[in-house]
Length: 93
Ligand SMILES: [Zn+2]
Image (tube, rainbow, N blue to C red; front, side, top):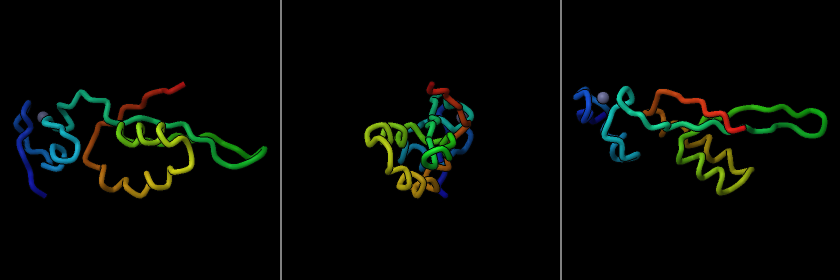
């Protein structure tokens, strides 16, 4: 993987972070809340339960735009988004 220097701490970080997400800082220096939590309801009838999905801000916006059932598509692209962190759990309710 091609690496570039973080503009803040000068440590190596994946170039993908800049190309894909526009981040010039590494995960340690990033102050962006890059993850959001979506509350989902699963099951039907009396057998429902709530769950939380952790997504990127981009996916969150996409999810909010499309409402419910396309969440499977977001799951599929998860591998491409494993360069970010740390996790920030944001309560949405
Ligand atoms: Zn850094």
